[in-house]
Length: 111
Image 1 (tube, rainbow, N blue to C red):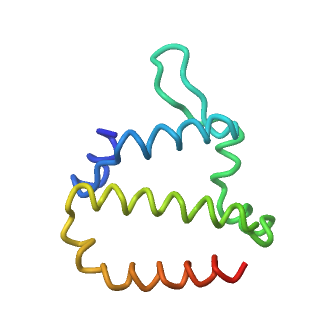
Image 2 (tube, rainbow, N blue to C red):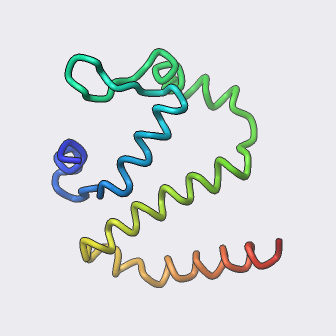
Image 3 (tube, one colour):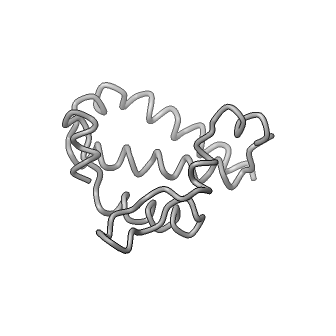
């Protein structure tokens, strides 16, 4: 979390509630693993392969609904972290966020 805060020049510090589930999921997917020497997470060969964006995008094909929903969930966690920090930039986008919420609600109500 410190590294993420530092990497964003203090702009964003994720909460444990958003970081640890993500680390668990990436570990389960085999993209990262916990180092036996220092306990830090490191990328696996599979993760290195998945980071090869150009070829990954060519072979990925259409995304599944599940992948899109998981990504939306991740972005929602990010916005929740910003809200807890009372980040002024979030307030500037409040109307847009409400509009997106309405659109998602309509989609969810039509299924």
